[in-house]
Image (tube, rainbow, N blue to C red; front, side):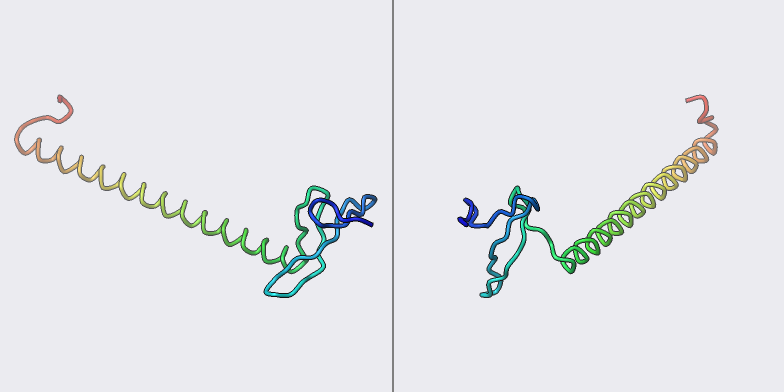
Length: 98
């Protein structure tokens, strides 16, 4: 059996390739799909899924923080508008007429 152009050995009926990968000076036998994408081990999949959950939580927290900041900015703008209207009224100017 001859390796393909990636140096892997195709097992067509299973739709996978078998080959070696070098990690930290050690060669490991690993599986790839027919397109040459490395297939993750169960541990690697678990780590990737955990990282995806952490990333999603971080994004949700950022969105919450942005929403809180927007709400605070809106409240501050409303308070400022109210103070300005009160100041105009104290000068006998009706802000609704402006």
